[in-house]
Image (cartoon, protein in one colour):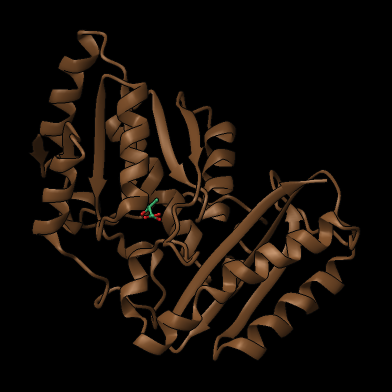
Length: 281
Ligand code: PAF
Protein backbone atom coordinates (compact mmCIF):
# COMPACT_ATOMS: atom_id res chain seq x y z
CA UNK A 1 0.00 0.00 0.00
CA UNK A 2 1.35 3.45 -0.90
CA UNK A 3 0.56 6.61 1.05
CA UNK A 4 0.61 10.01 -0.65
CA UNK A 5 0.41 13.34 1.15
CA UNK A 6 0.85 15.59 -1.85
CA UNK A 7 -1.56 16.15 -4.72
CA UNK A 8 1.33 16.38 -7.16
CA UNK A 9 2.83 12.99 -6.29
CA UNK A 10 -0.57 11.26 -6.21
CA UNK A 11 -1.40 12.67 -9.64
CA UNK A 12 1.92 11.33 -10.96
CA UNK A 13 1.07 7.83 -9.71
CA UNK A 14 -2.48 7.99 -11.10
CA UNK A 15 -1.14 9.08 -14.49
CA UNK A 16 1.09 6.00 -14.65
CA UNK A 17 -1.78 3.70 -13.59
CA UNK A 18 -4.05 5.21 -16.26
CA UNK A 19 -1.39 4.79 -18.93
CA UNK A 20 -1.44 1.09 -17.96
CA UNK A 21 -5.22 1.08 -18.44
CA UNK A 22 -5.92 0.35 -14.76
CA UNK A 23 -9.49 0.87 -13.61
CA UNK A 24 -9.57 2.99 -10.46
CA UNK A 25 -12.14 2.81 -7.66
CA UNK A 26 -12.22 5.63 -5.11
CA UNK A 27 -13.57 5.81 -1.55
CA UNK A 28 -13.45 9.28 0.07
CA UNK A 29 -13.40 9.18 3.88
CA UNK A 30 -12.67 11.33 6.91
CA UNK A 31 -10.82 8.44 8.58
CA UNK A 32 -11.85 6.80 11.88
CA UNK A 33 -12.35 3.82 9.59
CA UNK A 34 -14.76 1.03 10.52
CA UNK A 35 -16.46 -2.00 8.91
CA UNK A 36 -18.77 0.32 7.00
CA UNK A 37 -15.79 1.82 5.19
CA UNK A 38 -14.37 -1.71 4.88
CA UNK A 39 -17.44 -2.78 2.89
CA UNK A 40 -16.82 0.07 0.42
CA UNK A 41 -13.13 -0.87 0.06
CA UNK A 42 -14.10 -4.51 -0.57
CA UNK A 43 -16.64 -3.57 -3.25
CA UNK A 44 -14.12 -1.29 -4.93
CA UNK A 45 -11.45 -4.01 -4.85
CA UNK A 46 -13.84 -6.48 -6.45
CA UNK A 47 -14.82 -4.10 -9.24
CA UNK A 48 -11.53 -2.33 -10.04
CA UNK A 49 -7.81 -2.89 -10.50
CA UNK A 50 -6.79 -0.22 -8.01
CA UNK A 51 -8.55 1.12 -4.90
CA UNK A 52 -7.72 4.63 -3.73
CA UNK A 53 -8.93 5.84 -0.32
CA UNK A 54 -8.68 9.44 0.83
CA UNK A 55 -8.48 10.31 4.53
CA UNK A 56 -9.14 13.98 5.14
CA UNK A 57 -11.13 15.56 7.96
CA UNK A 58 -12.57 18.36 5.88
CA UNK A 59 -12.88 21.56 7.94
CA UNK A 60 -15.27 23.11 5.42
CA UNK A 61 -18.08 20.68 6.24
CA UNK A 62 -18.09 21.40 10.00
CA UNK A 63 -20.17 24.23 11.44
CA UNK A 64 -18.79 26.66 14.03
CA UNK A 65 -20.17 24.77 17.01
CA UNK A 66 -19.55 21.31 15.57
CA UNK A 67 -16.95 18.68 16.45
CA UNK A 68 -14.10 19.45 14.00
CA UNK A 69 -11.42 19.62 16.71
CA UNK A 70 -12.75 16.59 18.59
CA UNK A 71 -13.37 14.47 15.46
CA UNK A 72 -11.45 11.17 15.90
CA UNK A 73 -8.17 10.97 13.95
CA UNK A 74 -6.73 7.51 14.73
CA UNK A 75 -4.04 7.70 12.03
CA UNK A 76 -2.18 4.49 12.92
CA UNK A 77 -5.21 2.22 13.21
CA UNK A 78 -6.71 3.72 10.04
CA UNK A 79 -3.60 2.84 8.08
CA UNK A 80 -3.52 -0.66 9.59
CA UNK A 81 -7.18 -1.22 8.68
CA UNK A 82 -6.66 0.04 5.12
CA UNK A 83 -3.67 -2.29 4.77
CA UNK A 84 -5.69 -5.23 6.08
CA UNK A 85 -8.44 -4.42 3.59
CA UNK A 86 -5.80 -4.40 0.84
CA UNK A 87 -6.34 -0.80 -0.22
CA UNK A 88 -3.71 0.10 -2.86
CA UNK A 89 -3.32 3.82 -2.30
CA UNK A 90 -4.09 6.15 0.59
CA UNK A 91 -4.29 9.88 -0.07
CA UNK A 92 -3.67 11.62 3.26
CA UNK A 93 -3.34 15.35 2.58
CA UNK A 94 -2.87 18.12 5.14
CA UNK A 95 -5.38 20.97 5.41
CA UNK A 96 -2.86 23.28 3.73
CA UNK A 97 -2.40 20.86 0.84
CA UNK A 98 -6.16 20.85 0.16
CA UNK A 99 -6.91 24.49 0.89
CA UNK A 100 -3.98 26.70 -0.03
CA UNK A 101 -3.89 30.32 1.22
CA UNK A 102 -6.33 32.32 -0.88
CA UNK A 103 -8.71 29.40 -1.53
CA UNK A 104 -12.06 31.01 -2.45
CA UNK A 105 -14.11 28.54 -4.46
CA UNK A 106 -17.03 26.42 -3.38
CA UNK A 107 -19.42 24.05 -5.09
CA UNK A 108 -23.02 24.11 -3.97
CA UNK A 109 -25.98 21.99 -5.05
CA UNK A 110 -29.00 24.24 -4.57
CA UNK A 111 -32.28 23.50 -2.75
CA UNK A 112 -31.70 19.83 -1.80
CA UNK A 113 -28.62 20.87 0.22
CA UNK A 114 -30.86 23.00 2.43
CA UNK A 115 -33.41 20.40 3.53
CA UNK A 116 -33.18 17.53 6.07
CA UNK A 117 -29.62 17.59 7.53
CA UNK A 118 -28.88 20.81 5.63
CA UNK A 119 -31.46 22.67 7.75
CA UNK A 120 -29.67 22.12 11.03
CA UNK A 121 -26.17 22.09 9.51
CA UNK A 122 -26.03 25.20 7.29
CA UNK A 123 -23.03 25.13 4.93
CA UNK A 124 -22.28 21.45 5.67
CA UNK A 125 -23.16 20.12 2.25
CA UNK A 126 -21.39 22.97 0.46
CA UNK A 127 -18.26 21.79 2.28
CA UNK A 128 -18.93 18.20 1.26
CA UNK A 129 -19.55 18.91 -2.44
CA UNK A 130 -16.56 21.25 -2.59
CA UNK A 131 -14.14 18.69 -1.18
CA UNK A 132 -15.57 15.76 -3.15
CA UNK A 133 -15.30 17.82 -6.33
CA UNK A 134 -11.64 18.54 -5.54
CA UNK A 135 -10.95 14.89 -4.69
CA UNK A 136 -12.56 13.71 -7.93
CA UNK A 137 -10.37 16.16 -9.87
CA UNK A 138 -7.27 14.89 -8.08
CA UNK A 139 -7.93 11.13 -8.16
CA UNK A 140 -9.87 11.02 -11.46
CA UNK A 141 -11.41 7.64 -10.59
CA UNK A 142 -13.58 5.47 -12.83
CA UNK A 143 -15.94 4.60 -9.99
CA UNK A 144 -16.83 6.47 -6.78
CA UNK A 145 -18.12 4.48 -3.78
CA UNK A 146 -20.41 6.11 -1.20
CA UNK A 147 -22.42 4.74 1.71
CA UNK A 148 -26.21 4.75 1.90
CA UNK A 149 -26.09 5.91 5.53
CA UNK A 150 -25.16 9.42 4.42
CA UNK A 151 -28.01 9.28 1.97
CA UNK A 152 -28.51 13.03 1.43
CA UNK A 153 -24.79 13.41 0.80
CA UNK A 154 -24.97 10.60 -1.78
CA UNK A 155 -27.96 12.16 -3.58
CA UNK A 156 -26.25 15.58 -3.65
CA UNK A 157 -22.96 14.19 -4.93
CA UNK A 158 -24.79 12.27 -7.68
CA UNK A 159 -26.59 15.50 -8.64
CA UNK A 160 -23.29 17.43 -8.71
CA UNK A 161 -21.64 14.76 -10.85
CA UNK A 162 -24.53 14.80 -13.33
CA UNK A 163 -24.81 18.62 -13.39
CA UNK A 164 -21.07 19.22 -13.81
CA UNK A 165 -20.52 16.33 -16.27
CA UNK A 166 -17.87 14.68 -14.12
CA UNK A 167 -16.83 11.44 -15.84
CA UNK A 168 -17.27 8.98 -12.97
CA UNK A 169 -19.77 6.23 -12.14
CA UNK A 170 -21.29 6.33 -8.64
CA UNK A 171 -22.08 3.25 -6.58
CA UNK A 172 -24.08 3.57 -3.39
CA UNK A 173 -23.38 0.71 -0.95
CA UNK A 174 -25.74 -0.60 1.76
CA UNK A 175 -25.58 0.53 5.39
CA UNK A 176 -23.49 -1.73 7.62
CA UNK A 177 -24.98 -2.21 11.10
CA UNK A 178 -23.99 -3.50 14.51
CA UNK A 179 -25.77 -6.72 15.56
CA UNK A 180 -28.36 -4.65 17.43
CA UNK A 181 -29.13 -2.57 14.33
CA UNK A 182 -27.18 0.62 15.08
CA UNK A 183 -25.73 1.95 11.83
CA UNK A 184 -21.92 2.09 11.94
CA UNK A 185 -20.60 5.63 12.20
CA UNK A 186 -17.32 7.24 13.21
CA UNK A 187 -19.36 9.27 15.70
CA UNK A 188 -20.76 6.24 17.61
CA UNK A 189 -17.64 6.39 19.80
CA UNK A 190 -18.97 9.61 21.36
CA UNK A 191 -22.02 7.81 22.85
CA UNK A 192 -22.10 7.12 26.58
CA UNK A 193 -22.82 3.52 27.64
CA UNK A 194 -26.48 4.42 28.22
CA UNK A 195 -26.87 6.28 24.95
CA UNK A 196 -25.22 3.35 23.12
CA UNK A 197 -27.87 1.02 24.61
CA UNK A 198 -30.67 3.36 23.54
CA UNK A 199 -29.43 4.22 20.04
CA UNK A 200 -30.62 1.01 18.24
CA UNK A 201 -34.17 2.31 18.75
CA UNK A 202 -33.63 4.44 15.63
CA UNK A 203 -33.41 1.44 13.34
CA UNK A 204 -36.16 -0.47 15.18
CA UNK A 205 -38.49 2.52 14.79
CA UNK A 206 -37.64 2.78 11.07
CA UNK A 207 -38.24 -0.96 10.56
CA UNK A 208 -41.58 -0.80 12.39
CA UNK A 209 -42.64 2.22 10.33
CA UNK A 210 -41.73 0.39 7.13
CA UNK A 211 -43.85 -2.56 8.29
CA UNK A 212 -46.79 -0.22 8.95
CA UNK A 213 -46.37 1.28 5.49
CA UNK A 214 -46.33 -2.17 3.88
CA UNK A 215 -49.51 -3.00 5.79
CA UNK A 216 -51.26 0.05 4.32
CA UNK A 217 -50.42 3.19 6.36
CA UNK A 218 -49.28 5.52 3.60
CA UNK A 219 -49.72 8.87 5.39
CA UNK A 220 -46.31 10.40 6.11
CA UNK A 221 -47.66 12.46 8.98
CA UNK A 222 -48.89 9.36 10.81
CA UNK A 223 -45.71 7.38 10.20
CA UNK A 224 -43.65 10.34 11.39
CA UNK A 225 -45.73 10.61 14.57
CA UNK A 226 -45.36 6.87 15.14
CA UNK A 227 -41.54 7.03 14.85
CA UNK A 228 -41.39 10.15 17.02
CA UNK A 229 -43.40 8.58 19.83
CA UNK A 230 -41.47 5.28 19.66
CA UNK A 231 -38.13 7.10 20.01
CA UNK A 232 -39.42 9.46 22.70
CA UNK A 233 -40.87 6.61 24.77
CA UNK A 234 -37.81 4.37 24.60
CA UNK A 235 -34.83 6.73 24.66
CA UNK A 236 -33.44 10.09 25.69
CA UNK A 237 -32.84 10.97 22.00
CA UNK A 238 -33.96 14.44 20.84
CA UNK A 239 -35.39 14.33 17.34
CA UNK A 240 -33.96 16.77 14.79
CA UNK A 241 -36.11 15.53 11.90
CA UNK A 242 -38.06 12.56 10.59
CA UNK A 243 -38.93 12.71 6.91
CA UNK A 244 -40.61 10.53 4.30
CA UNK A 245 -39.12 11.45 0.92
CA UNK A 246 -38.65 10.15 -2.59
CA UNK A 247 -35.48 8.05 -2.33
CA UNK A 248 -33.94 9.38 -5.56
CA UNK A 249 -34.84 13.08 -5.44
CA UNK A 250 -35.46 13.68 -1.69
CA UNK A 251 -38.76 15.36 -2.61
CA UNK A 252 -41.09 15.25 0.43
CA UNK A 253 -43.99 12.81 0.18
CA UNK A 254 -47.33 13.45 1.87
CA UNK A 255 -48.50 9.98 0.85
CA UNK A 256 -45.98 7.20 0.34
CA UNK A 257 -45.60 5.85 -3.17
CA UNK A 258 -42.82 4.60 -5.45
CA UNK A 259 -39.31 4.27 -4.02
CA UNK A 260 -39.47 5.73 -0.54
CA UNK A 261 -36.90 6.70 2.02
CA UNK A 262 -37.71 7.38 5.63
CA UNK A 263 -34.78 9.33 7.06
CA UNK A 264 -34.11 10.72 10.50
CA UNK A 265 -31.58 12.56 12.61
CA UNK A 266 -31.63 12.27 16.39
CA UNK A 267 -29.34 13.77 19.00
CA UNK A 268 -28.12 11.75 21.96
CA UNK A 269 -26.54 14.40 24.14
CA UNK A 270 -24.20 16.21 21.76
CA UNK A 271 -23.95 13.28 19.34
CA UNK A 272 -26.14 13.59 16.28
CA UNK A 273 -26.94 10.23 14.66
CA UNK A 274 -28.57 9.74 11.27
CA UNK A 275 -30.20 6.67 9.78
CA UNK A 276 -32.62 5.75 7.01
CA UNK A 277 -34.55 2.93 5.43
CA UNK A 278 -35.44 2.58 1.76
CA UNK A 279 -38.29 0.49 0.33
CA UNK A 280 -40.80 0.45 -2.49
CA UNK A 281 -44.58 0.37 -2.52
O1 PAF B 1 -18.82 10.92 4.30
C1 PAF B 1 -17.73 11.44 4.60
O2 PAF B 1 -16.91 10.84 5.30
C2 PAF B 1 -17.40 12.82 4.09
O3 PAF B 1 -18.52 13.64 4.07
C3 PAF B 1 -16.68 12.83 2.72
C4 PAF B 1 -17.56 12.27 1.62
C5 PAF B 1 -15.40 12.01 2.82
C6 PAF B 1 -16.30 14.26 2.35
O4 PAF B 1 -15.45 14.84 3.29
